[in-house]
Image (tube, rainbow, N blue to C red; front, side):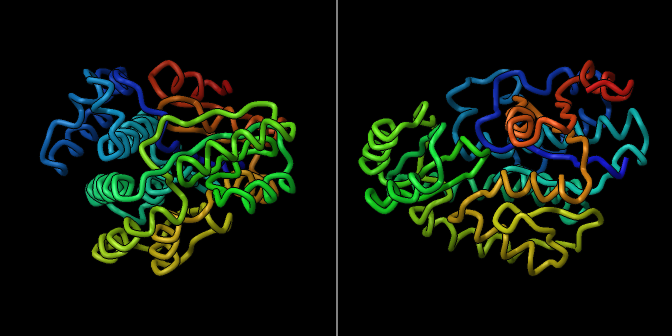
Length: 310
């Protein structure tokens, strides 16, 4: 399995009812949901399974919810296949998913991680209220044209997801102007994202200060499996590197395309996404059509992976 990389999704992959099949079919998954409820001091699992959707979409709820479902799928896979099932060349996650990848690499306890991402979401919400912003995905525009638009409008690049999908972040008026310019200059599509703030931009600086304090208070360990960082697209090997990456990542760009390319260059031929939505699987297929990609979100997909399907 040393040609595999395990990846974990970020915010936006949430949906009411996600993970309920895992809860009902796997003791390890059920214990994960219960651990999240106990760690947070409120029934997160009920919100995940029953909604309401508006409350689940709140950043402070969606982040621990997505992490919990991903960890539940990860642990259910181990329960089905044994510890050797978790062997891989590396792990990684998109934004929030980076925290989940640290749980998978045994660099942080799940109970600490779920509280940390809850705090992260609360800080991001507060920063968004004080400095309102927006995000948008731009499809089909080259990076040179992007650089010009950023210079003209003041928006920032938040995610480089694939060759032809880049996400911008910033002031609401600036993002709207950037979308208009992108359309006028040949973008295939511009999509405003349903988020509460300008994540991965300088508008999150206020949240970054609070996150630095929260991260410093956590007991991290050196990863047992290489964890590829969002900002650097390279492995994080020390506790200091982990802390720096998590804090910097709140305002800096997620280099997802570079991260996936690094893993492919290192010999990864199969990516397995644990969690809801299948967003990362879609992005990875667009980055490199030569790799196998599987999403594990329920018992059926887990059995398919166990049987060698993709």
